[in-house]
Structure formats: C-alpha cells, structure tokens
Length: 130
Image (cartoon, rainbow, N blue to C red):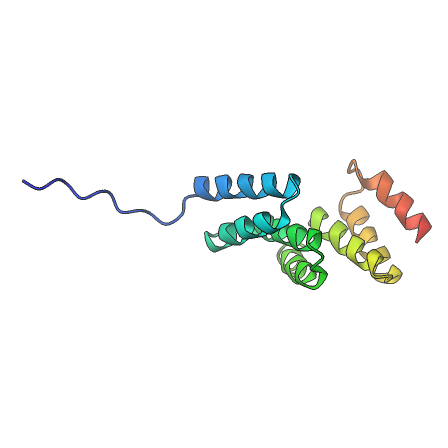
C-alpha cells in the first residue's frame, strides 16, 4: 500500500501571521525597514489586518517613503479612526512636511481618542509648540 498523502496545507493560520508579525517587528526595531516591509507585506497577504498595515507604514516611513506610509495609514484610519499609532505617525509626517495645521489635527485626534495614554503628555507638549 502507498503511504498516505501528507496533509494539505491549510490557508495561513493566525499563528503564521503572528510569527510573521513578530519577525517584521524585530526587523523594524533592529534597523532593517526594508526587511520589515517585506515581512509586513507577507503578513498582509496572509490576511494580516491593521497591525500589519500600520507596521508597513512605519517601515515605509523609516525608509523615507512618506507617501507610501501615508497611503497605508489612511487605510488603517479608514478601518479604525482611533488608531493611536496611525494618528501619531500621520501627525509626525505632517509636522515633518511643515504642515502644522494637519499635524495639530492628527495630534488632537490622538488626544481625543486616548486622553490618558502614556504618550499624551508628550503630545500635549508638541501641540503647544506647533
């Protein structure tokens, strides 16, 4: 008798996405935004959600690709308008581009959504200087 066929590979499980995300975060933290972007894109193709998209935006930002970062951040905010990470990065990008009004608006949205966050005091300080 022939050997049984190996089990069919199931579509990506959440465990695969978690390990993909962990690998991407590690690369981003270690200063490898190019590698991180590849990992985040892979996680997105596996069904990763807003976390993978936010990570991809951060990687793009680290590579100086602000337009791509903004595009990903807008997608995150479309599905979760209270995303603290997306609001802060959009504010930071706007601030870096000299768009003080937009930066102020994103930072204020962050404070409205997360008034007691550990980052709130720092953001209030930034707002007073804008």
